Structure formats: structure tokens, C-alpha cells
Length: 318
Image (cartoon, rainbow, N blue to C red; front, side, top):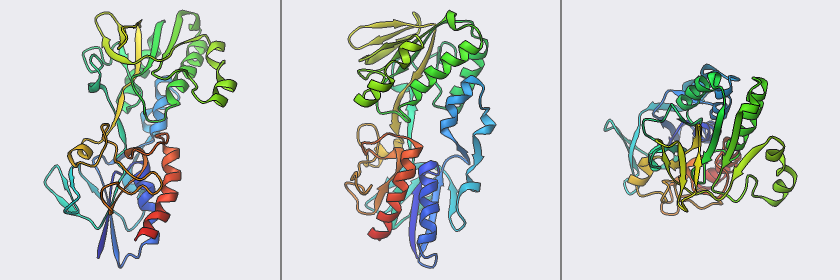
């Protein structure tokens, strides 16, 4: 029997096994997917939790209920991939051999990559909505917040769902308007890009959306640190932006085992051919979704279309 192993049972990994299982002869191929958590999070729902539209239970389901019959789900955390041996080692020492590997372990917010983001102020004056815990805590804070300067800051690109920070700003504008305190809230959008909308057509048709809502923008801001004592963002060119409440989008990086396995770039995203999703270095490793370094947006919708290409590529390749 040949062995197809998928690392990650999030959006991309789930679609990969569900699409490939009917196409691979069960008498010839076993199929296993590995993940560290039993719960599947519908990550776009994080955006709506801070404003009370969703509750955590609305966006969490057991992963096992979403995986196709005939696919084994192994709960465990990946320690390292040994590509020369075609083996994956889990942190508990379990070794899983494979003939074909698909890495779909996503990309993740890393507050520890920016000085000041991961300190005592996190959860008090510094928040994020790219994790379930962060979004839930932010909901508690916003529900009782009486106004001030709310700054949304993207530390560095690429990030998951690059439009989400702008969506957050628009939802915040509506949320505070509905509460009758919009006149007591100053909204500031801080981005490393040269504008809120960087594509010419989008900028032409959507550029005035921030002005209409009285949302200030600070472009070309390369965040160096967060000074929690002064409630201030500091850039590498020494610009400073004060805040009363900071909602940050931290640096996004791939899984740490990617670095340990020698498969990724400087952000731990697996280096692959952008047309085929096949590893640049090993001909029995594919990467799908946010885990790869292909030059597309990192989003569930992108992973959906990638999966349709991947299934054709994998079948043709095999």
C-alpha cells in the first residue's frame, strides 16, 4: 500500500483529503491527515466576534465531522519532516512514513516577532482578532469601551485575509455608530502599504470609503515596536502613533516545523512551484493554502481554488 499523508486539517487540508479520497483507489492508497487540535475553526468568523455578531460556539466544529470516510485523522503536533527519509516525526515520538506528502499547516500570527506586542499590555490595551482567544477578549473590551483613539495596525505583509483589517475598521465604525458613541471614537488605520487600496481600480472606486467614514490612514508605516508604557506605535523611521486601544495584526509565519525541516523561506512558508504546488526541493512534497509561498492572498477562498488545481496536479503527477 502507498501512503498519502496530509499535515494540517484546516480549510486547505480538509479540502485536499476530501477531494483526493474518491480519486485514489482505497486498495492502493491509505490516506492520513494529522492535526494538533480536534476543533476546526471557521477563521473568517473571528472578524465578527469582537462586535457580538458571532459567539465562539458559532464558528467551532469537530474536525472529525468534516473529514471524508476512508481518511484516518491522527491527533498530534508535527516536530519535523525528514524529507530524505520520507518520514514525519510528531512531538510524542510517533513516526509516520509517506510516499506522498501534502503540507497544509497554514500561517499564524506571531506577536513574539515584534517587541512590545507580547507583553503585559496584551489583552488590556493591545489586542488582536486573528485568534479565537484574542477576538473573544476584544469583544469583552469593546462592549464596555466608552471611546478614545482606536488604532488598527498591520505589522508586516503577507497576512491571512489581507482585506480583514479594513473590514474590521468598517465594522468598528458601524458598531460605535449603533452604540451612539461614534463621535467619541477616533479610528486610525496604520499599514505598511502605500494606501488602504493598492490596486489602481480598487483605489479609484473604493478609495473614498475611509474618508466618508472619517477613518484616518497612516501609510508606509513599518512597525518597529510597541511602547506599552506610552501607548505608542513606533516605526523604523521613528514616526510615532499614540493609541488608547491598539488592535494589531501581527507578523504571520508558517509552522515552526517547516523551518526545522529545511522546507521554507524566511517566514516558514513552504517553497513551491507556483503553478503546481510541488516543493522546489522534493518531488514527493506538495504544499497547499496559507502554508505555501505562492504569490496569492492567504485566504480560505484562495485555498478552495488551489485545492481544485491540486487534485488535478496530484492525480496527474501520481
